Length: 304
Image (cartoon, rainbow, N blue to C red):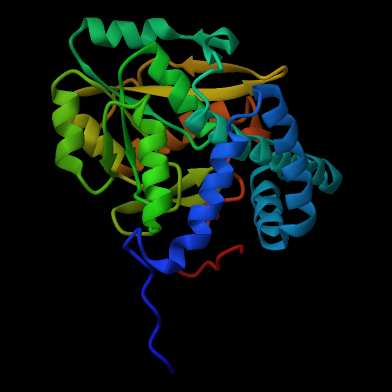
């Protein structure tokens, strides 16, 4: 067998020229009016539903596991809405990163700001319990209009895409912290700053425990409680939703009580249950195209 080619890491690598062309088109699309962007995004979602066989199967599998009370036709209808919402998100990203003319403040409604203000009044740093709704990029822009915050993220393997994301969010985010840099995250919290952190993806079984998410065993990293303890931070849920008419809502919830308690399973279960409550409000806007249950306890097969 031949040796596997390494992914290009130099932005000047000719293999990344197609990415450069795509990013130029992405910039151009981002200049369109906001409501037109969303309309095009829904068209992209419809096309993706027809063509995206593997991601369609992943989405339907997730919905079957997490919403067993729904009929097959109801789950398929939700899955179609997931793809429409995901298409909107892709075009939102282009506008969020590249269109400074649009005033999104007029489209935003904020709920629960008092929870954040109470923690900051106590001099605490705030660890925002983020969630992978597909409006994540427009959400970062909207959050940046409310207060200064930093974000913990996983760097993209493609250097051009990584630069797009970090620079695109850079106008709204104070610091982008590599999720492996635990010390930097703790330092920011100890200084009383706000840090967005989302533990709701399957990052593997290392530093993770299996606890239910929508009743399904899910490998969930235990870092949230460790960061909160070391940073002496309040953990405040932060959800962002897309509303009809191209409007948006950011909702902050009460700080998690007795968190961390010192038991990894209890803490991660509290995290998953909290996220589940917010996802159920707008389930079609969650990142169901992700293989959330890829890793399973020993003896159980991956549902994918």
